[in-house]
Length: 399
Ligand code: GLY
Image 1: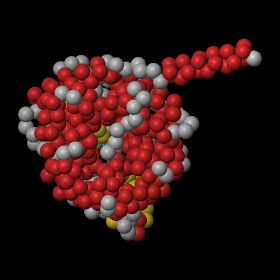
Image 2: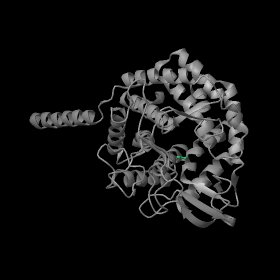
Image 3: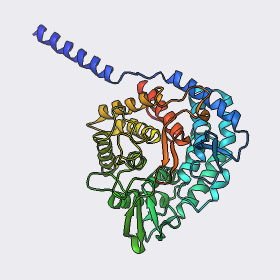
Image 4: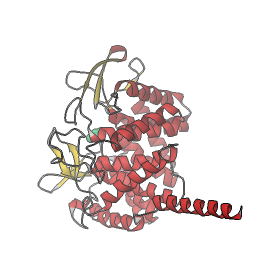
């Protein structure tokens, strides 16, 4: 009797050890954050003009900066908040405040669907960390601007005002703007934001995904929400799986589950995760090629930005999944380790002060191919912070 009990407790002990080993921290987050801080100190030094936001590098290695109206303008401020969150150094808070406010005027921009990226990444993180009521007001104005792009007769938020002869195109990337609207619904009590998000997500689920749970990039809608065409803009072909698009979908449906607790969104996120993680073209280091169906694989560019988004999303999804928790956490950690290795992480002072190398903006447009991208850095820092919290058995922090 005693022997059986002893055996049982030994077995339980071994299992616990194995489980702990599987979840063990293998990335030195403090060291990686210190490196990122050093690198971004250089970025701040090389960017004294608050109207010129770091975006990428040009082929000749000189900075490619952007105006606040470009979809990526909020990521730099967002990353500065992550550095403040990690270091608690007020110098980062001051820099983050400046680069966040530099995007303020976009709160009135009704010509883009990207206000989630542009406003929620800097102001949302800033509000989470400082409770600054001014940020809350700016975000509420911005969310109202974004909501003007939801036409109930179509049931989706319009991405672009016109594209290749279609006047109601929606890209899968748009799933990333819904988190902002959920925040606005909770903060303002206005259900319109919530309902628009859910309707958009439901129609995207119905119209953007293939049988294997990969997604089209662009769905062009006509009157009454009729699907007129399914196309690509940044992928290899209309029928291919553009990697960052898969990453946006994974992240977007994970957030949908967080905000609604509806099982169908968790299932969708898990299906997308399985498509990505089981794909025969996903390399061993789990950093995807720029398109899962790129014709020259393995002689094709990787997209570190897609890897960073997938890693961050999988850390969150690992908290919700009933059956694949460990698989997601392990895959997210593998991606993060790859990104933190010299294969993707720049040497100090190089790479135009960006943290990561080897992303792809748009290969079909020969734009930003195998370059650093400001949003790759943002989601990398986010993934590092998520990894750190989960390793310490702390819940992830959302607004
Ligand atoms: N939202 C545009 C992109 O992912 O490139």
